[in-house]
Length: 372
Ligand code: FE2
Image (cartoon, rainbow, N blue to C red; front, side, top):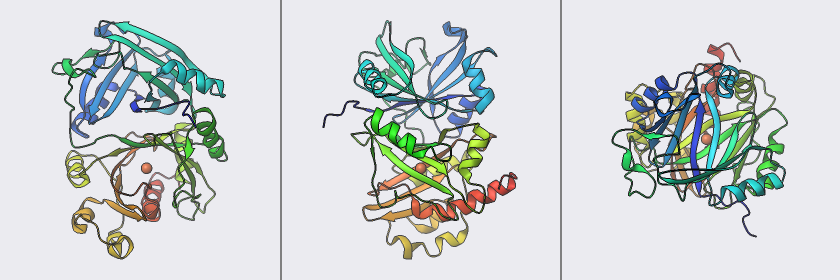
């Protein structure tokens, strides 16, 4: 069957934040991103300031409002710092918008083409969970650093797509592996249907993708992916447990559904996490006992277990291979958005075997916040 909404990958993820200038410093010195482009008062943007950050193929945009009555300011007032836009690279933004809205998606930004000296930049957007937008971006005829209205930072003028760009490798974060959304109790299947019917995604059927509702996890999750498998959106909803679900804690502080975590891949998680830890990025800790029975659970792996234990990196295996992963603490004061760093060796799962150890760790932190 023809894919009515072909997707080339994740173009960028845009956060609305309270203070973009300071957040950029955290992403640069903590995570190793380069600030490649900027839009703000100096470039003629009177409403907002935006900073483009790049590492590997990952592109993040941090945006803040310059006035109190702007939609960006209201987003931050309500949600705190959070993901406002998930932008997908598509071959035809107009057709993507048409196909999705025809199937019931709510339009947010109609098809728009903006041109400048670097060519034509085309986009449109639909509404996803909560106040999150899914934006369709076609930059195939655009050679500028990011988008019209943005100015390249010194040293990054030649970085436009198609200009023989050299990627900033930073600490080895390479691409976005998946973006997880948290939705309200009872809403997971509605969003699974949304991605299936309006965007042509399919549910990633995997042995660990059954509903995962345990005493520890207190969540249910299903994974949706596009036709090419380049974009994966797991959807979580809280489940009844003995204690308050971590998903419910997120919903309470984000004041609604939204993106919970962004998983970034690396091909050398030990090197990446070593750098990030040195730079002050805080990660969740699992009890040392996690590593004692590890070999019996996951079998032989290439990486030294003592090194993984020292850094707090988790390991999971399924019939296709194994994966290494670690989760940051929330990256703002509200217990909402966080990052995952992941290195895959064959496994296409999401680390279900680590849920129990992780959730014990998350619950310890929830208890410290008085939210358990
Ligand atoms: Fe994940």
